[in-house]
Length: 261
Image (cartoon, rainbow, N blue to C red; front, side, top):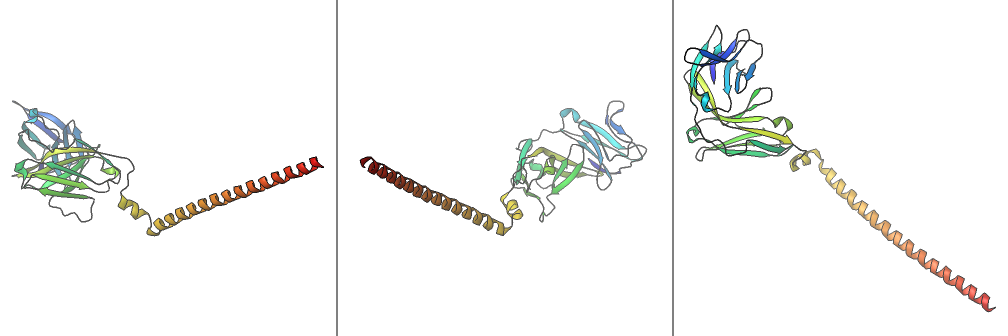
């Protein structure tokens, strides 16, 4: 959930859930930090300085009325409804090798067909980073996104995977309701990056074009030298055997003459 409340580091930020008689605190903190997390709840400041609330892995019991804001300043009360919609038909955990190109393709609820789709990441330190959305035209970037609204299919591609890409990815849409807007994230994928795989294109970029021919020439020359050495060795062995045989025959003939004498 995002509002027009400004994140004020000098005042207490909070979120609570309305009960029958009062609002029960989930998070209430006073800190210079730009985010704070408690279990599945996260309060944080975006790049524009606005106050945001994220609730991950919604459960039926999360439904209800919430109040959030900055103490002694602004606050909002919202009602959260939790529905059981099908999420992307992809593994919750995906593996990729360094340098690999991967594509995540998934289905989303039909009602989101006309919404802009967004992809963000969440690291282990609860830092949220916008990655790409369907309004952005990717020019030379490693991330690209395509939306087939007729089939309700979203595809996100990552080229030349790097170690830093191994974080949690959330895929969702933006909704605006009067003063409070919210992102509905229909799936999340944890990407693990391992190995030392390098794409052919990357290898070609690192190896000068002339080096390929030089290496090939070196291999051919080495093979020729080895063959020549084997032939020389073979001839030398044959000559040695012939000389040895002649010497042996001559010695035997001399011995025979001496015995007859």
